[in-house]
Length: 130
Image 1 (cartoon, helix red, strand yellow):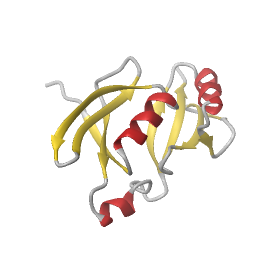
Image 2 (cartoon, rainbow, N blue to C red):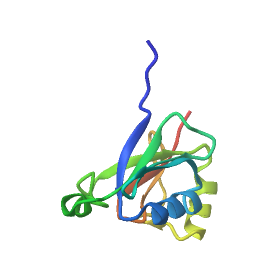
Image 3 (cartoon, rainbow, N blue to C red):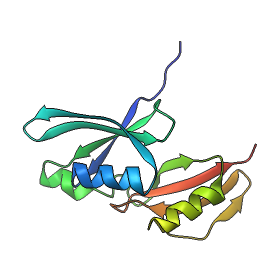
Image 4 (spheres, rainbow, N blue to C red):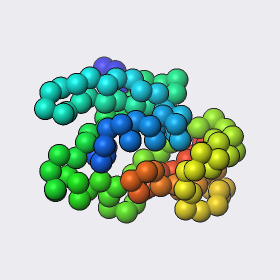
């Protein structure tokens, strides 16, 4: 049996602001943006060139949801963006205003640096060692 995770929900403040950030700063592609009525949309983005696992951008619609925007992983790194060229992507993302919380570091598993997205969610930019 072949299975994979299709989408992971990420709470956001605003659909269009989130689409702009993920597509411009992180070079993701907009895979789908379908109106569902009552202001809701089905919005999926993924790193350019991939579409197996995507982020489902979900605009917070209650106060409880809004309070979780940027904190879905409780302050831990909750998302891992793998790359085949860490230094290229780190330089590009830095030039686009992505806020890295640390300098790149070498670990036994690869080169990594933690960054925050538009909402404060923590991500690892990671190039795994072969």
